[in-house]
Image 1: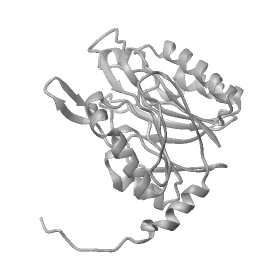
Image 2: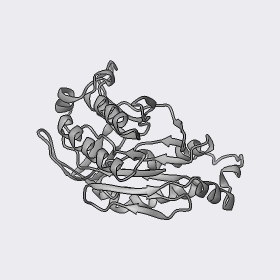
Image 3: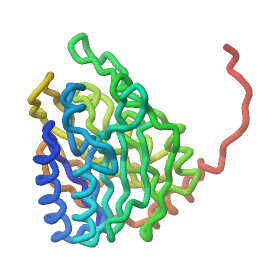
Image 4: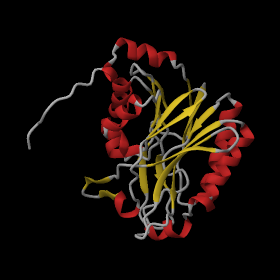
Amino acid sequence: MKAALLQITSSDDPGENLGAVRAMLRQAAEQGAGFCLTPEVTNCVSGSRTHQNAVLQLEQDDSTLAGLRDEAAKLGIWLLIGSLGLKTHDADGRFANRSFLIDPTGGIVARYDKIHMFDVDVTPDETYRESDGYRPGDQAVVADTPFGKIGMTICYDVRFPYLHRALAKAGAQILTVPAAFSHVTGAAHWHTLLTARAIETGCYVLAPAQTGTHAASRGRTRKTFGHSLAIAPWGEVLADAGEAPGLSFVDLDLAKVDEARKKVPSLRHDRPFDGPSV
């Protein structure tokens, strides 16, 4: 299977972003990709809850989801929508950060809501409280496809190895990590974290990313790290998109998963232990 990672710079205008992504999907399909992946919050990058309330929609009404399902069906491709910001019926009004796996008929095969919320103080001037606006998910997801089993995660999840180990032990051969990674933490940790997740699970890791400075009609602008990565099960970086928007291609060979796990079968070497005491 030839996969294409889309690296984009989403604005806070879902309609504008949808048009750009559809065009990139057509380009990827023309170049032979059968599996395309978009980054986290493909539909809207915004730090303004007021603006998000104005433009985000419920899943059943979301124009980005409908448009991308339609495009996947027209192109006959598998599509991972890295995530969409979506309204929910939660009493506290928080959104969902939800990833979708779409099949070549446009059907939704799997949904995953981001489990770990990015509540951090990166610098005195760069702070995030994702849990203020988004409610965390609580269900890990492995989706079956004709070309492999996919374990779905999103961005900050990458810092939690136990999630990825659980996905691999449940059969995942490919881990998806769509992201809108902070430029500061990305420069420090992005490559290392993703490579570690590949090595310790023997999985392919596919991480399409937002990049650059994101236009905002309200609230502060945001800068993301880019460097969409595809990493082999043995830890080799197969593709690094750098900082410019565009497409990265990688050929997935699941024999490499079996090969890596045969060399180091650590997924079968768990041992019970006690402690440490608190």
